[in-house]
Image (cartoon, rainbow, N blue to C red; front, side, top):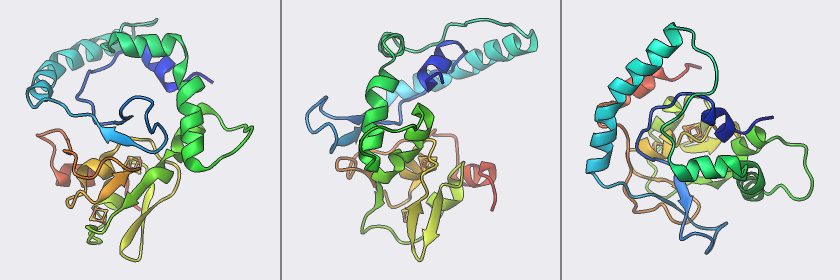
Amino acid sequence: MKSAARVAATSLGVHMPYNYVTPAPVLRGFFRSFSLREVPLEKPRTLLAQAPQRIETIAASVEARERGAFETSADPITRLTDRLDLPEAVAKPIWLRIAGVEGPTDLSFLESRQLMDHAFRADERCNGCAVCARICPVRNVEMVGDRPAWRHRCEQCFACLQWCPKEAIQFRGNTSGQRRYHHPDVTLADMVRSAPKA
Ligand code: SF4
Ligand code: SF4
């Protein structure tokens, strides 16, 4: 199966601000520490301003039923990791290790990715509001009593972490106290409206 990065390399993409978690600093405490990458406040505005034009280009390509490999706006590092197939060689073992899967496995790259939610937890600031459960696009978060539980079919969008109104959701050790980010023009009502219903 092709990795997600390979699929992205043969498609059209819109370059948006980075809301993912990254092992930090690189390689030190690799399996314990992840942090949210700080994005300078001006950069999201610049990227978001460029997005409509990019979307028009993509829409025109789809309407014209163009075929073949397209360039993406992915940065050189992304292209390099794709070429070296690092998602399969590096990311998959990390996710499996986070999930506590030991030894040989038949799990695919994408199945392994879904298990990475073993690293989420809600800290003492959680007030049981259930926003995380209501906005998850794949209904991977369920409330058990007044606390969220992750059901291991995660798509790693990080909406739950970024939108928690109490900033109570953490990923491993390093995300507490780090600035959250979501698109400035998207509201919580938008997120709830677009999420699948039970
Ligand atoms: S959104 Fe945050 S505060 Fe609300 S239930 Fe989820 S973790 Fe708790
Ligand atoms: S909101 Fe996104 S990151 Fe959070 S559990 Fe759902 S799919 Fe995973």
